Length: 113
Image 1 (cartoon, rainbow, N blue to C red):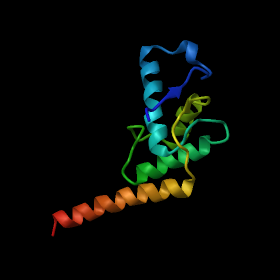
Image 2: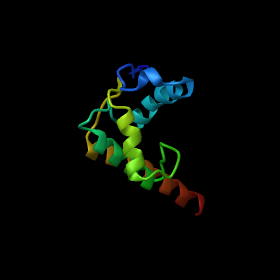
Image 3: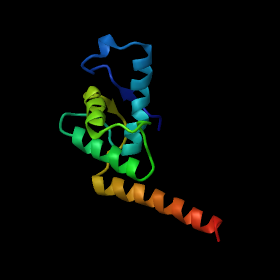
Image 4: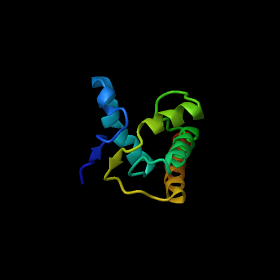
């Protein structure tokens, strides 16, 4: 299934330049990595948690050492963003990331044996 997204309801979309439209279209990939299908007022903190959790595990989806407050500000800009990504619980997300990190560590171990 193709990844689809809609950011036409974002608060300040009418001020977006070409670079911001490109960045907004790429945000769908971040939501897919986070197993979240939309950004709402209610799930901003969950998205921030998942971004920070992933960063601690070596996956910096926002490319930079942003503070928690800066990450939250970025995520809030995307309230209203929707994708066709299947949302999963926090536990399912953590298990997915833990599996990826475990596989990475196992590969490192086999290379150094």
